[in-house]
Length: 295
View 1 (cartoon, rainbow, N blue to C red):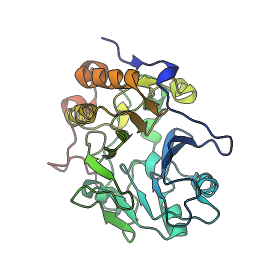
View 2 (cartoon, rainbow, N blue to C red):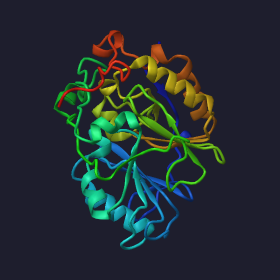
View 3 (cartoon, one colour):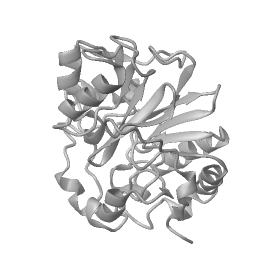
């Protein structure tokens, strides 16, 4: 069975703007690739101060580039109404503290991610044996210690609405992280998937660099519960989204993307799950606390 699901360029939903490299996929939704990860902007162009939302904050050292991209899209000095996290891995929270403090803005996350964001627990060790390529080999060098943004941290509402994003719902999509969430807008069937599934081969440094369009499960080296990850992909595929924006890789849309996502859901164990690895036989889960390491 193939370990990847390739797609043609026709599936890519990128609509580049010449100003700052930000890619708009809907009038009120755009993303920008920074280093190895995407950050997502919700809000219309020129929306102004406190009229937009930032989803995830990339790796450390990118705060200035995120601020510049936000200013070009929303206006000079425009601060977000909130920062919302898909999960707390280092490549999604690297610039979180600096941006939240500078913008004086609340941070929203799922309750199961709270220990990683209030300084009380680290993520489990990554698995460098899975997936092949240089990225898993480098994974032990990636930060996994908690950060402490507890004074700004808020929990996502229990009714699954998304703060400052009317018409959107958050969906609990664990596996890659215990409190991983994705965001869904039924009106135009748009999905912000985070790392529940991705559209590039994140294990390959070459694929990360060239962004060849492929449908993949979550990054293998940081996924700690493969059963939960499979159920999350199946739940998202059942929505049959028209547009998907993921944490890694390019946004995609249309029938070819939908067919690839359905195949990933059907063949997840063969396509996405490593043949062996630290968490294949012994998952780390929130239910028994094994997903939380003493920092």
